[in-house]
Image (tube, rainbow, N blue to C red):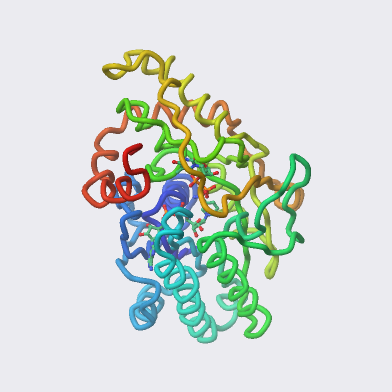
Length: 357
Ligand code: NAD
Ligand code: TYD
């Protein structure tokens, strides 16, 4: 297949493209606007492959998208381009509505026009795979219960609401126009090339810099963590073998409280980077409780039974092995970190964390 991947310069998109190029025979067209979260350096050697092409395009630009479909004639679309950070969506929801909702609508229309121009086996084989989040389901109150594909939507943040809206658009394009869609909803990812505004890389980099580790509220909220390369394999499995019109939940069976995650990172750093920054005796001493996130979801947890049973996908990493690899990766990759934590990122941390940044 030739797969048009949107958002391929982001955290998960780049993992998908690295996997497609190094482990499969598929070709890739990376369509990315290169916002603050997009970085071509995250693609590594994939960029050199003759099965890789890049188009710097905003998914809200209908004309540009039409040109991309005409030039590349893809067999499938995997849609990951999005604004993805909950805290940014609280400070400025407009970009989330624009890219996640309007952009998905524009992309669906471009894909539909292209799909309708196809015939025979190319038309039968065409797929539009929408990559979404478990946050569309809202949150779970207590320690029991899991999100299934039947859980009603109840998003809490501007981010999750815009993703929920995009999921609805994709399903409507299937029912009304017959576009052959697949939808996946995944839990929190972590791993290499994760932009350092998110919990795990932020804590690793702050700890190494001797800065406070800002835990929102009391740190009791629970997330279900999946190593990004396991997610990338799941996405490729779904686009290759998923049933048209179906939704698949993807998760790692790795539920942990935020405070526990931060403490584990500190413990790994004690082992892997025992030379502390000046003035720091133990990394865990840097843990600082800060004002809670407005509307903070309490617990996410995924039932990934359907994708496991129907498509045979299983995560390979445990939280222990994946977190160790991740911490080591951030210790080893200064050039990438320098490249993404430039001026505009510093503006964000000043706005979000003030004196705790
Ligand atoms: P990311 O923020 O790291 O990357 C997003 C990419 O999209 C960037 O390369 C950015 O340049 C690009 N982009 C943004 N707006 C664009 C536009 N208008 N046109 C073209 N490109 C644009 O995000 P991520 O963490 O890699 O997430 C990818 C997808 O997976 C998102 O749809 C997200 O909702 C979903 N998801 C993420 C997680 C997670 O834990 N990170 C979990 C489940 C689902
Ligand atoms: P995040 O990585 O932003 O992912 P999401 O909000 O999509 O789950 O946050 C993960 C959890 O960590 C979430 O409960 C909020 C919390 N958190 C902090 O406690 N401190 C921080 O500085 C950040 C960025 C997140």
